[in-house]
Image (cartoon, rainbow, N blue to C red; front, side, top):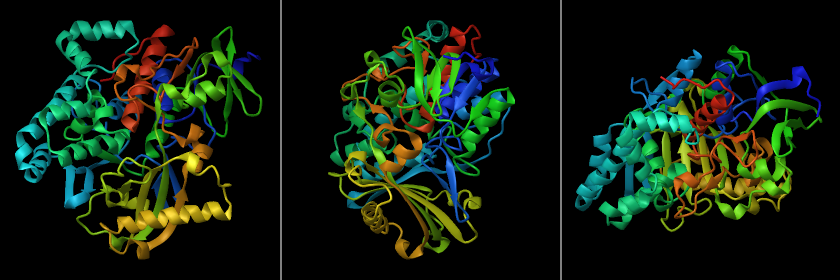
Length: 508
């Protein structure tokens, strides 16, 4: 290995997903030199934006927590705290509704910022479960209250755990007890109505891609309670604004992001990570390496030592996605329409590939994303790469298969947007193979999911079996979603900084 000075940094980060960029920004601001390598010409991974014919689309995420401006400390509102720490401004616009659910049997409910209005809407549909609804969502409020008072940090950092436990003994114990509980089993303590329990499954599936029984109560407390406190806020300019702001923060403090630089290997010496190798053969040295790749890509592709291979059977694998990016005439979307929507036709199929349609129209909040008189629409359904690998990308059969699935999704969506198919002026389609190609994700997957019965603390953490190799992103605790991977970045930066002798201050 060529340990060349101008090819070195204290910490190398593989991939510019939000978790990796958060790690780099916080370390760099602390005086720990970082170097981020990204295979694409833009940052953000699935939290990025792209343009077509005057439209700007979110490549993936579009529901954002963590931008509230309240003065509370703790684990929540991480975007606000991080950008405040970096001295970087990200403008946002509040969204009054997290998701509008359109479910079987005419069940329609918006999960609005106003918590009581949401609870009342559920109670109106299920008056016999009014008490159970209040008790279940109170449990989520309790989790939120704990998390909003405990500072963010690494669960593997003994010093951090000691400080938190000493200053907040009762809440620390309470959170530890709740970490062993699932969202679904907690709901069943209070609720018996099967349709309502299906809705709670959908509440979990909307962001965790698992039913409520498989979803940890702690994760639910973050997303399903914080929507009524910090709320949902959309970054002006689209999702790509978030990674771009993190890049500015990295560069502001002297760090570097190298685009069009694909890492093809992590260099190990005596079982210790010492650097990375790029596709062109260039090697870079570092005191520590942080991988933003999935757990399978990290240990079954970038690390070639078979002793560290990750067995796929250890966890469930999150699905990939089939996505539609549409530019439409604005007249097709009524004025009282909400930005984020979920459609389920049949409860028996909601968790099957294509069974649930996710739909967003961010131009309802940010008109700059489309030409005058137009809207952007982002629609997506779960899909498996295995079902697409028989096609050759770009072939006539592949293109036809995409068009057939897109037509099905569009037709089903006309249940809430009549005339959608005639209003489309631009259409861009992406299959799971697109996720493999652009994001280097194994099977296009969005990381490991816990099996039923597994505790949230069994999720991979930031440390790995390889010395000085750390992990970040949706393969690590707490899991999938932009705010979750942001937390993983804060946690990783905190742990690595202490290891390198420059511990971070808690985010304020």
